[in-house]
Amino acid sequence: MDRRSFLKQSGAAAALAGLAACSGPTKDNQAAIHEELTTDGPMLQNYPGIGVLGYGCMRWPMIKDSEGKDVIDQEAVNSLVDEALAHGVNYFDTSPVYLRGDSERATAEALNRHPRESWLLATKLSNFSDSSYANSVRMYRRSLEIFKTDHIDYYLLHAIGSAEDFKRRFEDTGIMDFLVKERESGHIRNLGFSIHSHKEGFDSMMELHPKYHWDFVQIQMNYIDWTHAGGRNTNADHMYEQLAARDIPVVIMEPLRGGALASLTNSQTERLKAIEPDRSVASWAFRFVGSFPKVLTALSGMTYRDHLVDNLKTFCNFKPLKEEEFALLEEIADEQSRFPLVGCTGCEYCMPCPYGINIPGVFRFYDKSVIEGSFVKGPEQEHYARARKRYLLEYDKAVESVRQADHCIACGQCAPHCPQHIRIPRELKRIDDYIESIRQETL
Image (cartoon, rainbow, N blue to C red; front, side, top):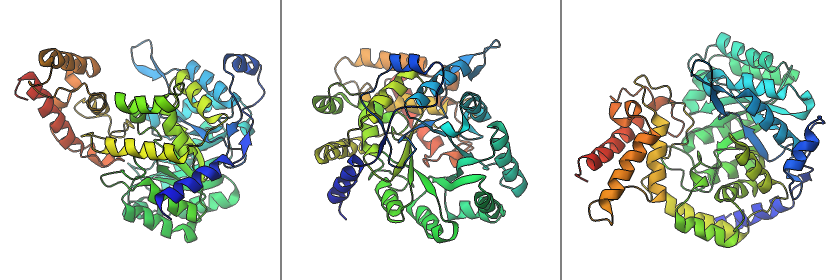
C-alpha cells in the first residue's frame, strides 16, 4: 500500500473510531474541575475503555525542598492526575528508573486516591544495569508493591535495543518464562515492549510474536520519525504497518519528539496557523498520531496544566487529519530533516554525567536555536555583533557554565544509554567547537 492510500485509510478509520465520554471516577472535586475546563466533546477511544491521550510520567513537575534539592511536586501531580482522569485520560505510563526512581512512587500516590478500576497502570522492567533473574523479579514485585495492586495492566520490556539485547536481558535470564506465567495468572494483563532499534532489531521482535503473543508494542512515532527517523532508529511507518498487519495495538512515545514539534520555524508555524488559527503547533503532532486507528494511546509528558488542557482540547471531539494536512506535515518533516539537529528528546537516560555536564540542556538549547533561526551564521549576517552577544548570553542562561559542553572529556559513558543512538561525545564536541568559534569570532 502506498503512503497516500495508507494515510487516507488510516485517517478515515480513525474518524469512525469509538468515542467515550470525557468522564472519570466520581470525586468531590470533579464538578469544580469541569467548571474550569469544558471540552467540546468526548475523549477519543480506538479501543474501548482506553483514552487515546495517555499520561507519560517521566516529566512530573519539580520543586525545591528545604535543602534546595529538586523533588517531585506531589500536590501538583495529584491535581494533574485528578483533572486528567476527570476528562477521560486513564492510561498512566511510568518506570522504576524515571525521575531517579521516584516516578512510580509519585504516580502511585496520586492514582491510589482513586478507585483501582478507574486507571490503567503501565510500567516497565527497566533491568538495564542488572538483568539477572533475581533482580528482574524483585523490580517487578516492587512495582506491584508501590502501586498497592495485584496486577499491572500493561507491562513493558523496557527499551529493547536489538535482538541481542532482548536475548541477553530477557531470554537468557529466564525472566520471559516468568513474565509469561504472570500473564497467564492475570497479574500481568497485557505484556509488550518498548523499542529503540534499527529495522533488523524491530523485525526480529516481530518474528517472536507467534511465540510470545505481544499484547501491545510501544514505538516512537511522530510526523518526522514517520519516514525520517534517522540514525539507527526505524522509521515509524514501517513499525506501524507491521504492527497493524498483526493486529497488535500500538502505544506511541515521543509524539512531540521531545518537545521539538511544539515549536517550529516561523514559516512552518504560519502555514499551520493559516489552517487552524486557534490550535497550538503541538496539537498538529497529536492529531497526526491520533489519526491512526491501531493507536491504543499516545503518551504525553504533561508537566504543566497548560499542556494537559491543550491536549484535552485536541483529543476531546477529535478531528482526524485530512489528506492535504498529512501532506503539509510531511512537507514540514522534510524541511526539519535537513536541519543540522542533534535530535535529543530529553529522556535523560544519559544522565547523570560523571563530569556534571547537562547533556539534554546543551542539546535542547542548540536544537532550539537552529529551529528558531536564532543561531549565529557568521560576520556577514545582519546585526552580527548583537546576534553573537545574545547567543552567548542565552547559552549561559540556559546551561550554567560548569555544566556546558566544553567540560566533556569524551569518556563515552553516556552513549550506550541513548535510545536515539546519538553519538553524544561527538555531538557535544561539535556544539562546543561551534560556540567556541563564536566566542573567538572565528566562525
